[in-house]
Length: 133
Image 1 (cartoon, rainbow, N blue to C red):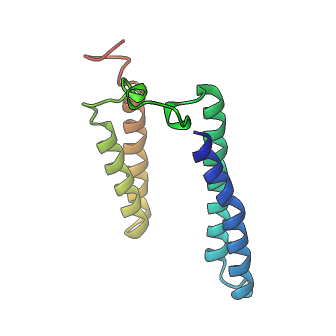
Image 2: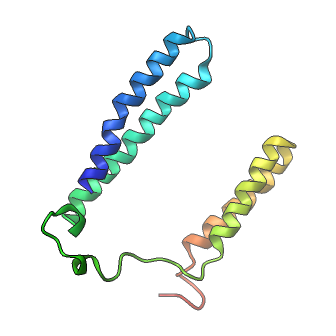
């Protein structure tokens, strides 16, 4: 994961420099563009540092070594919920919230309620019912 982390961390100065040049080109009168690029720089840094700390915790993977064999990467890669419906309900809640931004603010509150129920259901999915641990 170290290559991925340094890739994202290396993009931070690129995005910051691009945002600065863009800001000078528009005389700092169009805030959405350069602020969005500065936020993109920060987001890239956050992802890079997360991957860097995760790489230190996990250790080297077969993908990080030049002498690794294909069979070393076989096996379980993580825990996934193959029968979970909660991501679909959460995406419907997000769509309802974005619809509220376009149509009327009262719909946003309905989307927030749906999102709260969906997140709670997704978090506690393996704490109750058929798949409880």
